[in-house]
Every structure is written in structure tokens, then in C-alpha cells.
Length: 394
Ligand SMILES: *Cc1c(COP(=O)(O)O)cnc(C)c1O
Figure 1 (tube, rainbow, N blue to C red):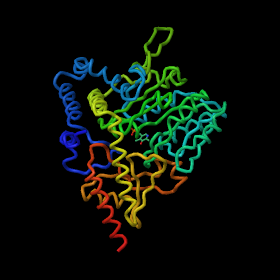
Figure 2 (cartoon, rainbow, N blue to C red; figure 1 turned 45 degrees about the vertical axis):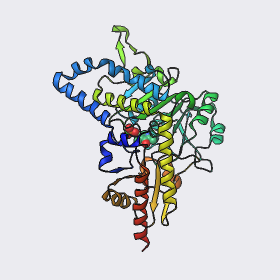
Figure 3 (tube, protein in one colour; figure 1 turned 90 degrees about the vertical axis):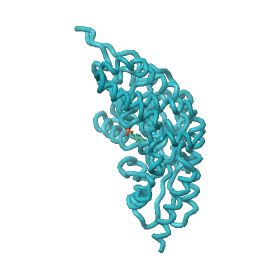
Figure 4 (tube, helix red, strand yellow; figure 1 turned 60 degrees about the vertical axis):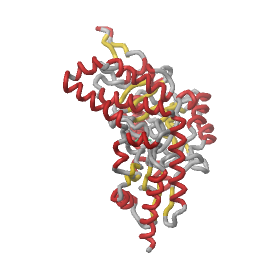
């Protein structure tokens, strides 16, 4: 990987040390130009006319995504974010009183709220599978809970709140054997390291464009297996999803398009296609190796500083690094780093409710490098945090 060349084609790297890829990755110049030139085409010849002219490139994006995560192009539905993609899968499932939804402590905030709403509406029960001693979802406990009351296993692969990687492939092996649908929230893992739906054994997978994939904001997608129950009856019927059959009613579009809306921001979709293409060209193996190595360097650097603690769970950990500086609120630490040109963010207790209840550590400072960051930038962040910690100790 030619990091210098990649950085020259990433405008944001010139001005900031961007360690907030779990929030939004920096666009490449190519992706930026792709988005802008489609908007210019819309302005010049009309929005519908621009979509017609770019139809082939637009239609190719689902195939590019399928090459990235596995599966087929007709199993991909485009969305404006990951949450809406996840909602489309989840809300298309039917639950009855006594049905169980199994999830983990790392589950994302919006997913948890959706489970709570489904429980309130239908009498289904939410069961939070405990962690193993490393902090990953405990697959032995999951195996014991997978009985005929289970309608769904919904798991977050990599949480928004830290460096944990949940054992998705092991979970998929268990859910396959039990015949229970497995909905994987891969929002933080797609684009960060290789994710393959066949290898992981999930039935539904959701991701966003803007985070480690480096696509534009306002993009996301769902991969869904045609034989999973949610595929049968999407929760919304509209002209983008179904065709009127006259008095007899309507029929769903073939494949995952039945989950899509009619109106889509095609400039964003084309930008997402550009970002996916770049990830494929660089290779997700190489991207993942470098991103995780930079994460490890950052975590080890911070662990060596007195007055700083890192808080990432799991055995193998990813590029998301969470920490606290003794005596300093996370928001103040993030602001102090921002003043030094270093972009980070903080975890929100309300966005990982079960993890917050369990550990009580949030908010934390969250740093999330990606492959285009340099070792120098990592070391600069460690030095800046060490200086803040030293101030606090004085
Ligand atoms: C960011 C995030 C989401 C939500 O993605 P959006 O594109 O903002 O809807 C879902 N799950 C996880 C784990 C996330 O980190």
C-alpha cells in the first residue's frame, strides 16, 4: 500500500490527524469527485435525466457491494444509512408473546430501542447473552439459550463503544445449526477488515457507507438472504418495493429491492460505489491488517502512559481504541485533542445501553485510525494524550 499516495488523494489528511473513522472516514479525492460530478450533472441536465444517463454505473453499485461482503447483487438493498437498513430487516420479522430475541451487551443503541418496542408491542422477550471472560459474546451461553423459543439472534459485530470484535462466525455456526435467523450489525466492521456473509453464516447484514468504508454520509445497505423469514413480507409496501397487480393487489419486487424506497440520492450511491471499489482494489485483507496494526500500536502506546487507561474488550481487538485520562472528562479530553488538530470522538452511554449498564465506563474517549493514517499520527496522538495526563498529575 502506497500510504503517501493514498494520503495525497485524501484531502482531509492535509489539515487534521483524523482518528474518527468510527464516526465518519475521510473521503478519497476520487469519491469526492464522483459525488460532485453527479450533482453537477443533475444540475446541468435534470435529476431524472442524470440518473438515466448514469443508469449502468448506478446499477453496478449493488454488485460492487456484493463483491465486498459476499452474496449476490440482487441480495443487496440500498439505504440512506445503516439504521434504516437494519430496521427494514428487523421490523419485517413477526414476533408473538413468549418469542425470544437474543442479543449481546455490545448491541447498538437503536437496535436495543427497536427490540424494546417489539417486546412492548408483541410480548416477545429480550435476552441479553452474557460475555465470556474476555468481554466477547459468550458462545457457550448462546448455545445453551438457542431453543425453540428463539426467533432471532441480533448481534453487533464491532460495537460503536470500543475495540471488541464479536465472534460472528462462531455465532453464525450456532444459529445455522439451530435454524434461527441471525441479523448482524456490521456497521463498524465493513470496510475496516474482511467481512464475508458466507464465512460468518449470517442471514442479514447491515452496514453504513460513511465510516470505515469511507463513502459519503447518508448511504448504507442491507444484505439479506432470500430464504430468511424477513424477506417474505417487508414491513413497508411502496412503489419502490412492489408492483400493483390491479384489483388483485400487489407483488413484491424480486430480491432485496423489495426493501428499497423509490427515491434515492444517486450522487451518494455513486460515491459509495467509488469507495467500495477502492476498498476492493486495495484489498480488504491488506486494509484490515494495517487498520488493526495501527489500532494495536495506539492501544499499546496509551497503555504505557501513567494516568491513561484503555477500555477495549475482547481477545482480538480492532482499530477502535477507547481510553480515559485520569481526572479529565472524556468530552474535555476530546476537545483538547481537537485544539491540537486531532479528531476523535467520545462514546455515548445511551448508544450502547447494555454495555453501559454492565461496565458503567461511558463516556470514553474514542480514537479510530484507519489504513491511511500514519504511524507518526498515532504516536502524535499518544504524545498529546500523555501531555494531558501529565498536566492532570501535576
Ligand atoms: C454507527 C452505527 C450504527 C448506525 O449507523 P448509521 O449509518 O448512523 O445509521 C449502527 N450500528 C453500529 C454498531 C454503529 O456503530
